[in-house]
Image (cartoon, rainbow, N blue to C red; front, side, top):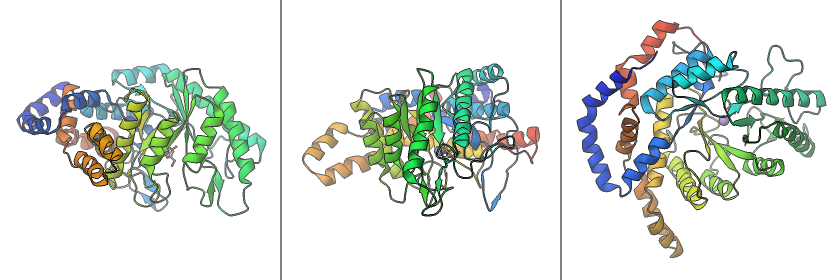
Length: 424
Ligand code: LRH
Ligand code: MN
């Protein structure tokens, strides 16, 4: 299903008066609102190809109908999101869930929808039907050299797919670890994993990046071989300048100070990118900003501070990706909500009075420091996000138009109710 420009323009015309009133108030309140709007227009968030269908848990999965049946239909769905918010201009593929049979055709189709290919993701956490050796006891860490080689070869295969699609980064998330004390020699597991990552690193084209994604637990529940930011940083530092850490917000132990982790990884020049989502308990993969919006704001506050300190290009120098799973909500609506929450956190962080904050920090005026940050977080920036979408040719309210156009109903008519998308 494609959304024609005329539908978007008509919808915006119908809602322009109300929007302009809100925008006038916001621009009167927020000093650098024009600059913020321009930075929002440039800011693109990659959509995961594995989160366009209904997700599930071991207890069940309840598909909502009209799910994409192929990579082509997944690209159409991301194209639809991008048409609505002009902020979802890239798709991140997961191999083998989304192997492009005809890379050129896929690349052209994506281009028609204004989409680029962000990081490609390898998968050595599942055994494929045609796979010779099992990853039950891990992939790159495995005591069996042949299994480690199988995992390295898979990652090199994934890089090849990425090159054909015009991607320039590989995300490696390893489920490797152990479930019981004594099951694993941690030192050997680290050394095997580093050796494997070094072989994969050697296969990277010169302009590529490798993102080493860490996670504290699941599917292993005693140790994880890339278990936290320190371990990921150790690997990335030993691998070389093309290797970076990847921060998935749901991959931390309870109450971890993620914004401090982000600040230090950025300071070290080893922060590669993000998998945005939210969680209350474990790796819940819920809508970004849905449970802990203040934490998301604080993370962007450290990102703006740290990126400015390194004169980084906000839109291009880090990997901005969502990683979510939708058990009860429409996958496309959930993704639209996540993109908006991320854009709002970024806009609020850009509105922070950094000079005043530095003065207050140097005076140990704790209350003033808090007031400056909380004021920014309590500032309604939704009109700025809507204006950025409007200027880029998107809808003032993407979910509003998604529902007005009965997109899900149309997708169910087109694809049927029982279709199941590959992925989580
Ligand atoms: C692991 C993870 C990783 C992906 C997978 C789909 O929990 O976050 O990024 O490979 O989800
Ligand atoms: Mn992830």
